[in-house]
Length: 344
Image: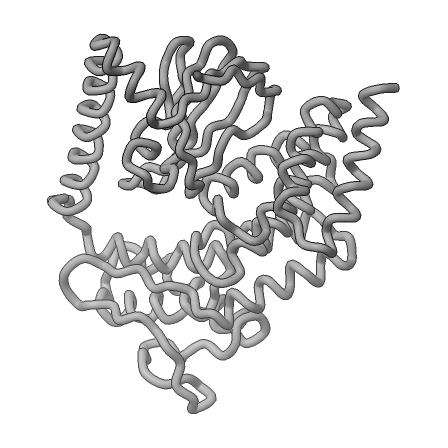
């Protein structure tokens, strides 16, 4: 028989990537499914209506969850095993038809997104694209890459429409790169550095679509170290900016640690709502991260800071099941304080 389960607001029914052989039916309350759009990488939120099933595809197909199920308000949910759901559906053809409609719509959306990714006819203006790349690196303080791309622009477009803006980028980037991100190459040269050592760089073709150069690991490491140093000095706002620079890159070995550092900075500044938004994004993007327990702990701390211990409690409970031995004592301490505040 299906089981009725009561979930508290802000709890998590399951995370993306979990293996879970249950099908859920929302009886009352509000639940959101968070996933990533395969075309843009942006977070997509789908709201479950009362009387709707969710978690069906992954349960029936026996593959990991593709979305995270977040409880927005206190909700009552019925859980079915696969056998129970199949037996129930066989006696109710309306359920089968509803599922077929939902699956058909989802397949059409996926097909449209894949078609857009694979067959896009969008053309890129090479000159504007090269200038955009140089500007992006310069604004994000990746001066070595900015100097390289800007020098390439000047070599390819000596009378280009962005030439007036390219000059300051080259001059400032060359000066700043030596202090922050290593030696910048000499303007006009894409091979070798000023110190005589070779440095990895992306190839920028003379014709065809512009390929954006990725920041090198050394630059990321330096940015992360700067953020850590600022955090040790309790310069939370400045540290957050450096962590967020890494987050905006959306890749690299320091990405998850940057999320955690940014969450700590926002919490220390009592930016609880922004910290919760950041943490929710992390959960959606990295549902199996080893740092998930710490992120969940910060979410709980934010709700506790907002005088909502009832909302903090589920996050501490979940964090405790994932935490390593060094983090467990701290979570237990927070959990005890939270329970004390609830029963006070």
